[in-house]
Length: 222
Image: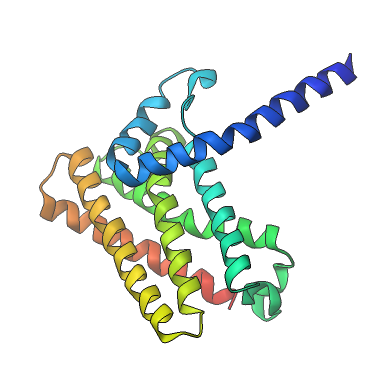
């Protein structure tokens, strides 16, 4: 009986992993073309029963993790191993392989959804707890995945020797920040039902907090 349960679990695991080949591109396309609608979709899906959530897409945290894993694979195939894995200075000594590096990057980029979600909860003047934080955090994971992909792409280009590539990487970095920042203004304005200027204040404060935390923690692994 235990063996049959194991086989059944492996069947389900294989199907789940193979389904990512379809639902990852679908989720990426929808997030790139309709980011705000996908963020609203994420919040709505959390109201369904556990087995009925995200049936035609990937769940937001999984989407973010897979995006960072794919981005890391592109990095390895273009510019090689990250200095975080090679160097053993500071806390980078704890990062011994690519798997731990991917997990580290997932933690790093998850700072953005966490800070944005916490800012929204505070803006709503409701108690900050696991229940009130979860829905906006999941919504923000959809927005953060393309942002993380663009940031990683910019980093790859700026590590190349060609001056044109470095310039393209800098341009992509600026575009990523503007795209993500503009999306946050629209998101805060929609969910807090405020004007764009006040929404820009919330978005800017959250962005500065998230970037500061991201950079400070990154320096510990430099």
